[in-house]
Length: 133
Image (cartoon, rainbow, N blue to C red):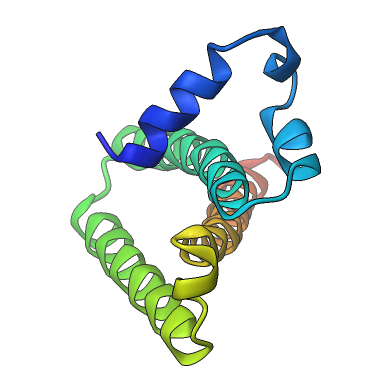
């Protein structure tokens, strides 16, 4: 497990002050660790949402007896592109030293949210196309 995740678990279990929104308190005490922890929390939320929508797309494709290989290939390529672009952005802007992994994680969150929107559009388009007219 990554050290930042372990630290977040410790912070979240340390009291009820963080029960509702751990980032609200951490942002008040601005620090590199706080920024990174909040970025990790936000990324985990987005990643979980992406996993849920991905499962829905897979279920739809299975229901329609469609080949899953193109989706799997596209998803793997998208993950590789997201990770590479976010790492490159941080290097270009020389941000890693000042913020740790927070910038990379924040970038991944933005890309993940965009992917969620794309998959939702796909599902919406599919359901609209299959509705009786």
